[in-house]
Image (cartoon, rainbow, N blue to C red):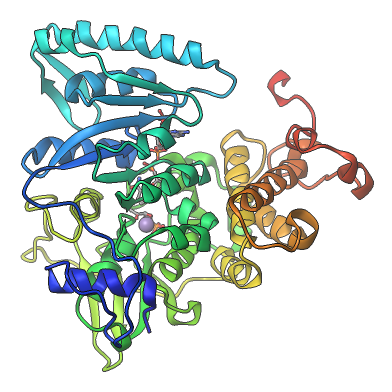
Length: 493
Ligand SMILES: NC(=O)C1=CN([C@@H]2O[C@H](COP(=O)(O)OP(=O)(O)OC[C@H]3O[C@@H](n4cnc5c(N)ncnc54)[C@H](OP(=O)(O)O)[C@@H]3O)[C@@H](O)[C@H]2O)C=CC1
Ligand SMILES: CC(=O)[C@@H](O)[C@H](O)COP(=O)(O)O
Ligand SMILES: [Mn+2]
């Protein structure tokens, strides 16, 4: 049941000896991944270090110096927090993309100013780092710290490709994480993957570049599946069951979702995460992406993957085997566990998270997902089955729609409605041609989808009111840039 992509990893994880090079069914696998040696700490590159995954990873690294040392930190635009992290951990390399429209000189100067500020803070003997707390710092060591600084849109990709590294944790949000994912794989590093979007939009391209066992899942569901898959052979797997909290609107009908607010959408019942993934949980787009992620990661057919609502988020997913046995991975919702396991894959990190207290009376429940009120999962399955670039379009349209929802330009239901209408409008032959899928064609499909999504609210950007695209002739005559920027200048409103 499980295909070649995963079976080598399964063999090595199962044996614990990293030696087995064949699948359980006897097929010889190609290009097995050689994991980092275990006689020294793993050198970690943290991409997205200022975000929810990144800061929790730093906490794990801080608490386990015998297992991990930090090689590089990469962030988007939060120069202040990056500088504090840098002075507290003192990795040799730090990287900052910078906000849209900033020159690389401005990004570099801004980061240097913040580094100076963090060094000054360190003169008190400690630096405060988000999710890690106050870190003791020797003032002289802080003053002497001069990291290599990478800046600009490719900064994270350059950090992912650094030779003096063993593991790249990709904790960037969105498909902008694709280039760093590819760079980490090409550099031969273990990729601890939280950035599900890069696998989903890159699809076969990412898989083709990954040796077996080179991607360690960090997404909680996929970490759970990977752990449960250790319980049987690939041909004994009957089904993957991906659990969903159901988000803050579980139980509501479509009609009741019309006027829900941003604050309600961001009120996740069980997890504290970044904005994009939190909104995606509310629309169930997150679960849609995760079903496709499971399909790509474990080579299990979509028909054999089921999503089920489990409001307590204690069971993070399950594998059903052919004899009727189901193996579930359970732990209180805390991303430190899958982040630690991903960075140290396939070995567990003692004390990474607090286990469930079985003396506490508790009830864990399961219920079917209401696909009528939340059509995102079925839409993704349909997209994945239509063409190799349809999920890139799905994801790009969703990213644009979520930003528009966060900016108050569209309503909650408009998010998935936009994704559906852009996906249905997409005809790959007309947009990317008929040749083999390449990185360029994926990026072209994405650009088209972003412009098509934005066109739907650009003309009339009032909350809840959408869909006023230009006529086809106007659209066809526009350049990519004009399509991206189509519509009124909303900054003037
Ligand atoms: N948070 C969670 O618990 C979980 C998250 N995930 C997945 O992990 C990924 C990260 O999620 P989360 O941590 O919540 O997101 P956050 O929004 O909290 O963090 C995103 C991080 O990406 C950084 N970033 C953005 N653009 C760039 C860029 N061009 N180069 C380098 N860094 C960049 C941000 O930097 P800055 O802040 O400086 O702009 C920030 O550090 C997502 O794919 C999400 O779906 C999966 C499971 C659980
Ligand atoms: C923690 C994690 O992995 C998130 O992706 C989580 O799954 C979101 O919760 P939902 O189940 O609500 O999407
Ligand atoms: Mn998840």
